[in-house]
Image (cartoon, rainbow, N blue to C red):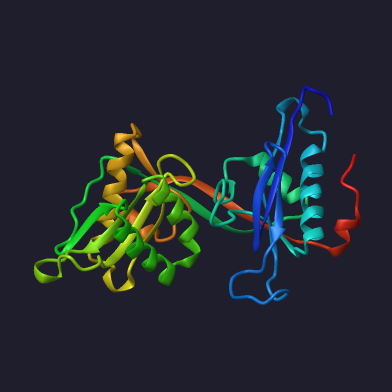
Length: 279
């Protein structure tokens, strides 16, 4: 490996807690069972987060070499499937960017098949919407507000707890609460929705969750409005809505498609772990 090029690959696994020990080299993980799953019952799925080769060293098979090395590491950890797609909750992108033809060619040449697609959408940071009657939207800084919103997330979308906590820590999370008046004003707040932004990328929206009993009432629009205000103050023209779920909801707010991604999957052979990644 000469000084004129750089190799980098990062691999993480669903059901594993990963932490980078060597910057710009790889991630190393400690195996843990999925929550609620007995040891040995959860299928481990590997995720290749990033493969990059210096432009001057491409077309030499180095990308494929790195993918094989990642797959061998996954198999050694007990994974049976490798995925080139988002690894929730902490991910780089929702998948392989559809404009990145070279990456898609690499995926196909190393035995991956396309299994789906995702999109990002962009919404002007000038978007504004009022909170509906009897609902107030405020930044999650008060301990009682945070506890109420976190309880809602934990009960309804536990997969978003990591992103929620990161958003709160960065003061980039908002909650929607039922307004309390009269003798109930001092009671604990009742959360009916939340949103976070800039958790993974500055200006990226997500996750967002509205209590199912309060959907289609303008709560989500008011939360997105709060994020748009933050993003405008940060000097950005658009809010980037990452890994969009309800396309119709955001389209009604005026959002447009900004990026497209493809997901790729490969079933791993147990023997792959015995092959050498050198070369």
